[in-house]
Length: 95
Ligand SMILES: [Zn+2]
Image 1 (cartoon, rainbow, N blue to C red):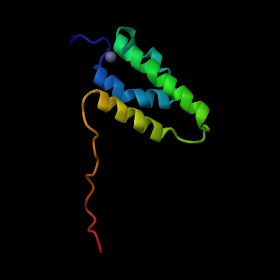
Image 2 (cartoon, protein in one colour):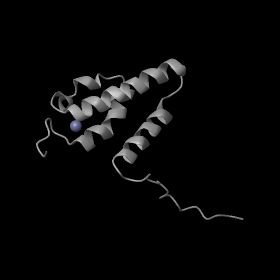
Image 3 (cartoon, rainbow, N blue to C red):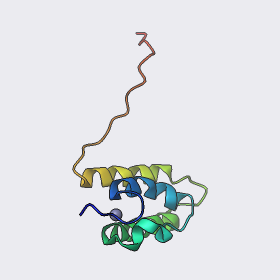
């Protein structure tokens, strides 16, 4: 299962999916999808979610939070825990 089509792994592709869909590009045309049923199914799921979200929320709202949730869900599916980005700690806490 090492010969993935296109020039990226499923992991790399999936990390770009939210941007692809969020930017309005046709993610379905991505070369990785041509031979990867796994990511085809994933994209279908994401588009279903995205479509539902567009109906539920006005377009003015940036979908950043939505994609945040989707990305978290994806990472959880892959078995990795949630990643806390608490790296910026240069400010001292004043009581
Ligand atoms: Zn794939």
